[in-house]
Image 1 (cartoon, rainbow, N blue to C red):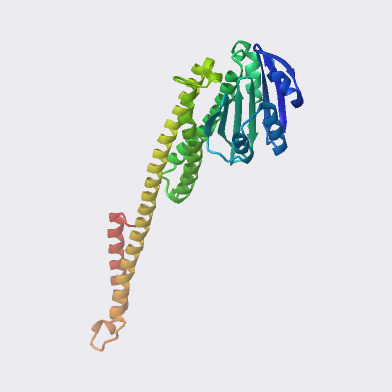
Image 2: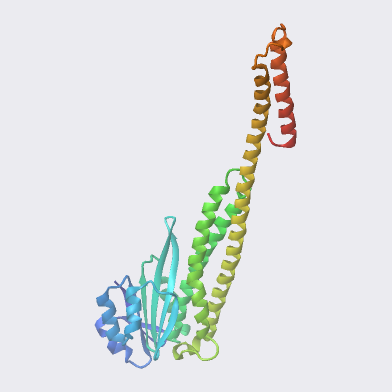
Length: 321
């Protein structure tokens, strides 16, 4: 659906305009149009393609979605795809933002995401001296807002990882920790898939040859590139920490199983000695004087109890029990 469609000139908002009037405004000197769509339909995209002269391949990518983050140039128009990540009711939400940028227009298409970019428009309108840069600054503001949304997602991963590390040596928690670590690893990989491709192409907007629409805002895009580099470095550190934590937890599982095996072996040894002594007196040979001795039965029980007690003391001292 259409969220808003606004015309700007010289850093000032001129008017909210109808889609049918876009063609008139984009041909007005010094004016650019900013359109925002959410969960758009094929008909809406087709109308925007006609108004802005968008390339068929770019429109097809925006329509189908599920694209890898990328930047493509079609003449003087830039097409950018970014992933939007967030957490909604404990579930990871993965959406997509497609941005079309031309010399006199910006079209953003947000799909499968609850994140709002209304604050971006408010920010731009509060800074008319920057909005004078036109579509290039709006493009930067949208890209910067999308990247900034990665930081809370990253913070959630780091917070949960710290919580797991605090429980890593608690007895009986190893298997549960491993499940949580694998879930964290999956979330970290989702973030990496959103950041790493974007980091590769963000450098196109500052230094060297840059698209004409971004020429006056190169320093702002350099800041976005720095943020992406920070996030990418943090992801690498998280992946290393998760790998180490998984190995430690697997070691803890092995240690716990070894402790259980030692306990079982100790008790088996105690009962084996008791069984062996009981078996000797259970053979009932004729020439066993203790069988006819009045104290033979108590003596046998005492021998069994003493041997079991000695073994128990020895295993307890060795830490097996």
